[in-house]
Length: 294
Image (tube, rainbow, N blue to C red; front, side, top):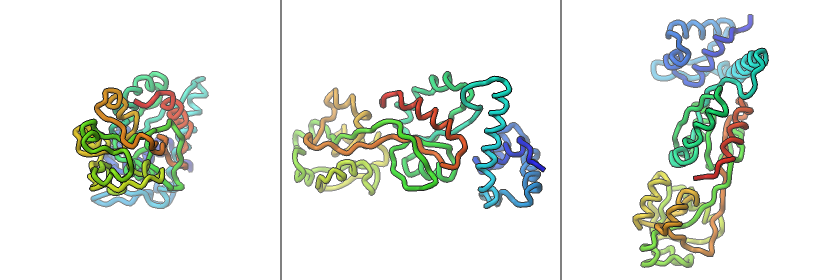
């Protein structure tokens, strides 16, 4: 017997949220009714789809295999309904898009009204996190996709390039006046500000082959915190050009090592390769890529 679409919808909600009560609420069902739908699926397939304890819910191997097929079935059903009604555009869908806080506030949030107007059937929720966190959450299906420049090697993930991201090595005018940073050896008298011990921002300078050895490194967690400390003269930092564009124009920050151009990167929209909603991600990528970084 074929499973009902309502039961598959319940399964997909539970697989995405990994919380039965929250999944039931998202579909306006009582927990009892929701649980019965899941049980009907498990009985029909003759295999448990979830491992449930008092602390957590996880997908079984059967559940993991079913999830992409269930999503494809629901997408196909939505396409059938739209075709019968003569509908166009994207199918009805709810997705969670991850991004880091600074980029989300400055670039993605200002585009949400236009996005909703262009794709009224698409519901977009936001999640803010660091680059590695975003990669992990897309990988484990806690969020659907993410905009990040963080590099990854996970074969389960795919990407669509959105836009180029350029970087600059900067410091406050007062700091660089008292302690010039005009040649590599000058770094010995400076503090480098970066996100973490891996120095993910400084690598854009290191990858040029420049040999800079700083007196110390301070880890600040976010580029917003790094910018604030750089403005106060606490150290020098490699930061996205778009993020400090106004600071450079107003000379609140100035470039160091002006003859050296850091490597560039790209923001990418990443998603799981087995996610059947690639068309939605392609539309999102095309939409966001038209807007300059800010």
